[in-house]
Length: 424
Ligand code: EPZ
Image (tube, rainbow, N blue to C red; front, side):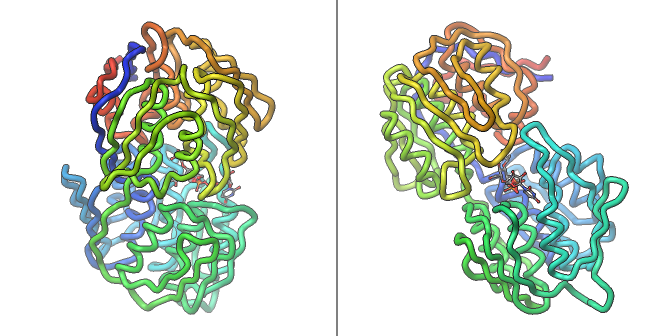
């Protein structure tokens, strides 16, 4: 398994290209199942999760042309296999996103239960509840979700759906199920993430009738069929936020090209309060920092968009570890998303955890060590900490990082970091 070897203490200067968003790409690849015509996506990031999703869709019979310029053409005209098998789903939970489109277009689906992951049990009960409200008959047996239309239905029917909590991929599954359903569907407590908005814009380009996307109430009016489309994937706000925190921690002056500041308000607000300068440029963001030692650590709690994103919690904590003062981080979305804490402690961080709350004593002088990545964003947190640790840090199990970041070490090296990938 690959390792990243980092020698800390170097500020970052220059510019970084921000890629297309992983969490918009994954549902948008699944949306191609809704049409019998080719769908073209551009600005698709080169990520392990994207390759996994493309393999899953090809396994179903989708014809995929994947250029290396970030352009992917998907043709779902001849889909024959309506199954998402365990061996693929177990490596990527987002496979659950084929459920809505398969039911909408074909009236049937067999999708392996995703199972838990490092950050929590992550059930899909809300996905099932909402699709049942739309007329799906769903049984869960032998680790699989067996879904078909209820007796007497020839297609899904519009419904009013209120989930027990806001769910991002749940909202996406319901939107993709509703665009071909009979009548109107209203999502009462929909997720508002920019990736939801981007998916809705793609579906509208395919002929769907959707309004309210980006707010907590989304209305979808079903249409008989959808066409193909050309859609550019929105920039990845979490990749951009990760690099904002990296520069905040190491110090320096970096332009993040294509970054969308309007998708990062909560994070930018906290960075400004910490003493980091973040400026909106015509096509991106510019971030300047004196380095974490000169910053003031910031307390925050993660909440649904537009609040502070849970996917930025670990990265901002890495900065707080070195910044001045005590800070409190509350993780309200997932029940086990502090796995980076014990690894940060190996580097010398002073953090105590009590349930959903972590208290960080800032001002730590970190020293390099061997640390182990446990999930995607925890890995990013360890890289940031390694960049400000004295000496050499080895981050192991880098495959977690590769799921959501396209060659992070290359981008960091391009702005002055001492970081190498070692194929172990
Ligand atoms: C999406 O996951 C993202 N993944 C996650 O990003 C992100 O952390 C999460 O949203 C929250 O923003 C993708 O978009 C592919 P949820 P998702 O359904 O949709 C509970 C990353 O690092 N819940 O919004 O799976 C759930 O357990 C990844 O890029 C149920 O109980 O998250 C969690 O506590 C990690 N039952 C909360 O709701 C359900 O049926 C929010 O989960 C669904 C969710």
